Image 1 (tube, rainbow, N blue to C red):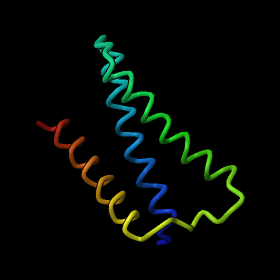
Image 2 (image 1 turned 180 degrees about the horizontal axis):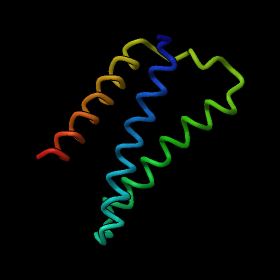
Image 3 (image 1 turned 60 degrees about the horizontal axis):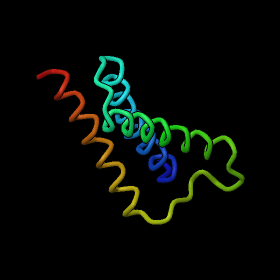
Image 4 (image 1 turned 135 degrees about the vertical axis):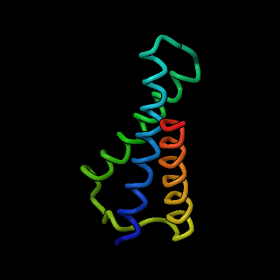
Length: 89
C-alpha cells in the first residue's frame, strides 16, 4: 500500500473518531468546550484530508517522512481500539 494513502487514511480515521466522540457528547446535551473542540477538530481533520484528495495538484502518494506515516498509523489503530474498548466496557 502506498504510504501517502495510508497516512491520509490514518488522519481521516483519527479525525472521524474524534469528531464522532465530540458530536455524541454534544447530542447528549453535554455542551462543553471539550465537546465543541473535539467536534470542530475532528470534522476539520476529515475535511482537510478530503479537500487535499480532491483538490491536490500533486501526487497523493507523497508524505514528508516514513516515520510520520508510522506514527499516524499507530495512533489511528490506538484510536480505533480505544473507541471499541470504550463501547464494549
